[in-house]
Image (cartoon, rainbow, N blue to C red; front, top):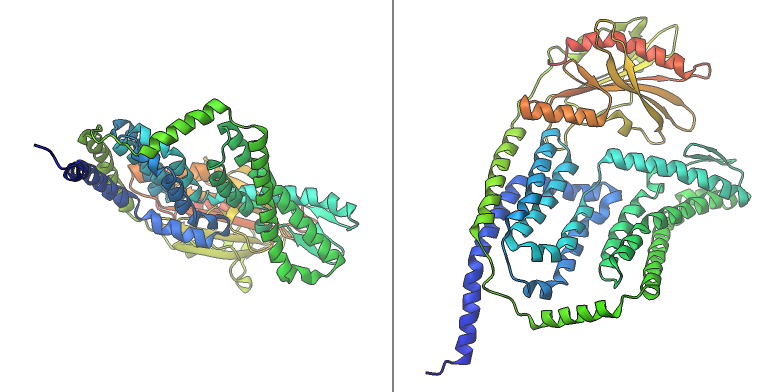
Amino acid sequence: MNENPKSAELSGERFKSNADIPLFVQGGLLLGLFLWLFGSAMPALYNDWFVFKQFSHGLLVPFISGYLAWQRRKELQATPVHSSPWGTLLILPAIGSALVGKAIGDAFTERVGMVLCLSGGVWLLFGWQIFKRLSFPLSYLMLMIPLPYVIVNEVAFKLRIIDAAVAAPVLRLLGVPVYRENYLLHLPDITLEVADLCSGISSVFSLFALGGAYVFFSPMRPKLKLLAVLSTVPFAVIINLLRIIITAALSYYVSLSVLNMLIHELTGTITFFIALTLFIVLCEFLQRRFRLKAPDSARRGIEKSAVKDGTRSVASGRSWQPTLLGMALLIPAVFLSTNITAQSEKFLLNELSSIATQLLSYQVDESKGAGFYKDPGADVELSKVYSSAQSAPIELYIGFRGKIQGDKRLKSPRLGFPYGWNYVWIEPAQVVSSNAKIPINANWMLTQNSQHRVLVLYWFQVGEETFGGEFEKRLIQIRNALFFARSDGAVVRLATPLTNSDTIDEAKNRLAAFAGELHPRLRGVLPQ
């Protein structure tokens, strides 16, 4: 009996559809656990794209990544599905990263775990061949994650110094009298500051993201693609330096009002597109100068013709075992994540205001009120100015938080400055406490604006432990969150102005003596 070809075709489609049902169920189970573990990180990530201008390009990255994957849809259709337990090689570090991020309130670590887990899920569910074809679109998602502000701030600060150092001699060649002081350019009628937004850091991130997508479609060898993407960094930095030089020259030769005109804002956009144009020209040059060999092109042509046929093996290796293994890892991770977020909140033993109003020869000066420094992550804070007839005043700030909740945590004082201020250098310090054998581990930090300098001594404190480094603080928080179900801590900041008659050593001695007297009193206030 003859079979109707049309009915046979429909039967084949129905068989393929039925064969896909277990795959959809497995994917739905893994997706549900993924969202349970990482769902809370997504709204904050979306918010960061709008709050931090340096990372506004992150909003486009998921769409670009999806488009890159869509471009390979025919290859994916022609590739059989073979579920693989090797996807756990990415899921395991993803879970560790997520738990550490939740324990210390570090959004970057948690978000990296989110991308790793998504990539591992693709590998586990669809197999190595499909994962390999989607490796670039999945890796590209890393560019949507804002880097830790500590790193961004440090890189931006170095770029500001470099930009000012290079711009000063160029301006002199253009006839502009200028004196450079760190990231400040002193012109006859005005002092220009190379601010964070003028450092070029935003252009670097945006151009790097666009460059990565551009080379994906460029017919170049992998090494040349890597070279082209890396070239976006010097292009962005050099063109942004040109913006600084033009702005300073116009301010001197034309008018100071240039700084407040639209042209000052437009130079940022114009220089970015100049850098983008240079990058595209470089890519075109590399494509023409180093053409791919004919055999490679021929092989890709054969691959394309095979893909065009759209033949896909339905009888592919789809097993529940890899999915069950992935679920066996994700379910305990969700449980641990819930425990971490449910850690106990600690409270002060006594009020911060109970700290003595007089330390050494210093007395709280009520007429000066509170200092300028604030930590938005603190639950309770104390801000006072202590004055002495013998020496310069000392500003004291203590911020305490009883429990980390998401990104609500204490920040490093190196990240909090009013407009026009920044640090010049930071170095480790060990200060002897007046009533303890263990020294205070802290940091010295010299800050300045165009007219004043202030020396700062700061440290983090958990119980009796003190530490100045951000990395060390996070290690302690991980230990406490995992083993003691607590994430409380305090940040202490002392600051004193440097007068014309002051030396750095004299200011250090002043703050060290004050800190040594303060530390024993903190031990009676902070939870142990």
